[in-house]
Image 1: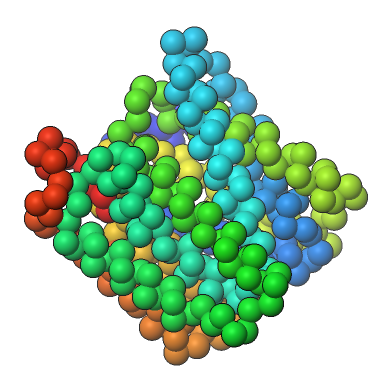
Image 2: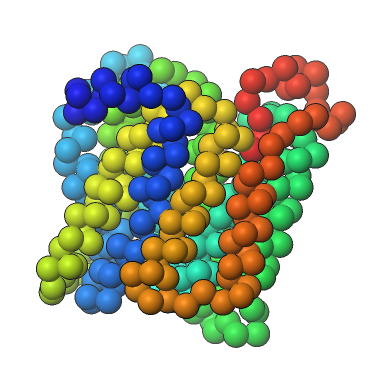
Length: 306
């Protein structure tokens, strides 16, 4: 891990975030392989975090002075666990393309959270980007085809982008300094605090993969799509502006959509492809002038809403 840390210390924050986006993009692929082998949503979500949690437990030792930051990371981890759980449930209940595209409404929530909570600058381009994302999501949501279960899955799926947007905004300028590994460790503990009881309650008899590709998917979910990209993202986010993080997130969308289509044979409709292109365009819009409604002190902030 020290060797990895030495490499990442020399890399640009944007490159780290880009690599993290590629890793995160494989989450839907690995999750759907495990669902097909009889594993429950709760157990799959737990498996995404439990192996990294064991490895990161060595980095939990933290000074008492930093406990306020520890509590904040625990709370972010707790919220993110619920978001990922809702996202995986939506992957199983809705069409995967719909769930994936809903996840990418996070630029809208990043804008909203950045302005309302973190007092970020508000720009015309940021507004345009956010509204394009909402239009893209509306293309793949067909209310007339939703059952009661899928309606709840649809609503719950929006929790994941909300939490991710909050994480982007906070990690851009955390209140206290905490090493990347310690930050990851406490965030992962926050995940496990909520996921272990939920998995035990929902699946008293835990089902494991029946085929070798399921075990590979399990390892891929834990490391390729969770531990490694989370490490890269935490380090990269501390060196990168929120608007750049959001732009690079377009790579995650492409990987998520195309990997499911290529490896699982899931057809992408014309509306799916159109929505994906709209999101990519939205995430690629760079920020320029801020709107006059923003306070002067916020206009001088180095970070922005998206």
